Image 1 (cartoon, one colour):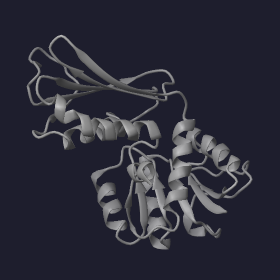
Image 2: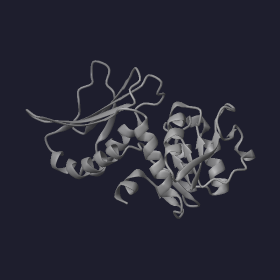
Image 3: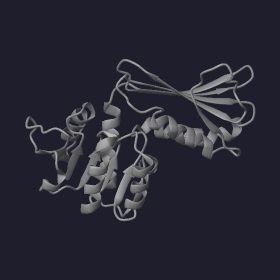
Length: 251
């Protein structure tokens, strides 16, 4: 049985994760972490991780980026493997992740969906054949409560494309004004926010007289929760290092 500490336990993703973890015969939540105390759950929820006494095999972090330094600092001090699913992290956070992964297992990915990661791999492999004669644009859509833009997934897809190109593209985030004519070396990334959209991403290759569009639509948050649990199971027992969803896909 894998003992999980769930960070961001009281949020929407935390609730979904509890259901997925409970339904899995090989995993259980033994503790939670959140900014506010919660006594309604069947396990302790800590606002100060230094008082956490439970034996934890892995941490899943689906919290707010402002809380990330606390949860990552705790994981590092205890050398507990951590799955990081929080978006909007700062450059300081990303540096801490890179340095921390030298000491203990760290799993960092922009998107926990199997489908998105397969698409990223496919884009990386196909884009060289479309480098000449096609303009590339990415459109991402999310719910109206998402704070960061563009999404980490949009950047993941953009990076996968750029890695497959001979001449790297410059990212352009949205367009506004009277002088926004597209440049040849531009990759446009656009964010839409509204309603309760869990996540939609489209990559458009626009050529002369034809358009190729690769799209992914998450129908619920469940797909991300299931991916997080798969990642947690994958990470337990691993050597120190930085892991991502592409490794789970190829495992």
